[in-house]
Image (tube, rainbow, N blue to C red):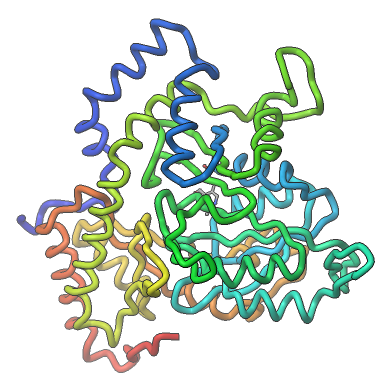
Length: 410
Ligand SMILES: Cc1ncc(COP(=O)(O)O)c(C=O)c1O
């Protein structure tokens, strides 16, 4: 591969060109039947995606954001409740909490997995909340509000440490909603269950996004909730469809939050490839790890604990010279991303909650240092070699700079 060839951060055009022959019949089928909303294309995808996630039910919705919102509402979170999540996520997680009428509370992430730190969660629940034994509910001391749910985010496709989180949820009577929007097919080894469990099968319900760039992406907006709870699935089927139990009979006010059938058909077609795509991403991640290991004094590589089989939605490294490295790679024609540059607690809409810099030090440090390298199933060995070569050149060019200090893994 010549140096002049650009390497995209994500090659969505190549993927769709390759699948054109499989995807066009989906559109043709929808056109011929005019079955644009609901119907067998949606149901077939829902059934197979539930199976893929080892969950009993899947309900297709219009986006991952709706999936988080509907999961919270259907699981029983009410306006005025407190829902605990992490500040290292895409803002949709907290938007959905606010849209449900609940209040967002944050706990910091683990410095190696970048997911919710169960010790910080425990500390938060013990320090900021007290258990009202009469009603068996956790009450937030300062806000005098019930703390009813927790949303661990399987960020970058790596599962959060679910055993520890589920145990705390059991102890404090909390609903667990997995934000699996980046984790289609990720697995977690549960010591409690002595088996690997799929993202989307562990909480009371889980939210998935099928935004086009996701490991399983639509050709537009789409999302889904998976759950083992029939009542939750039923409620979400109504919430997504204006609260209807049958046409024009409304049990409640709901939303226009349906998954349309063309997107469902596309997702169903792509689902057949997902396991192989995830495997290719994992192989690319292993190879990046090997090739980049010689720079581990300057570059913190992704850490996968023994209980995790991530699906590398993103391959994320950390360096103190993140901005310089990103600029260098951009000049070399290599696409990268920053997920995410500003932690959610420091974003404008949450300023009125009084958060400030220093409140969540791990998240803040991670946000200042993360860089997502090119990662997609068709990433070739030559493309990877070139990414690594450019990083090596950058490392050499900055070697003599005194400010470049090895980063301890923390
Ligand atoms: C962690 C997380 N949660 C929620 C969402 C929201 O999904 P959507 O964009 O489909 O609404 C996303 C999407 O990027 C996400 O990454």
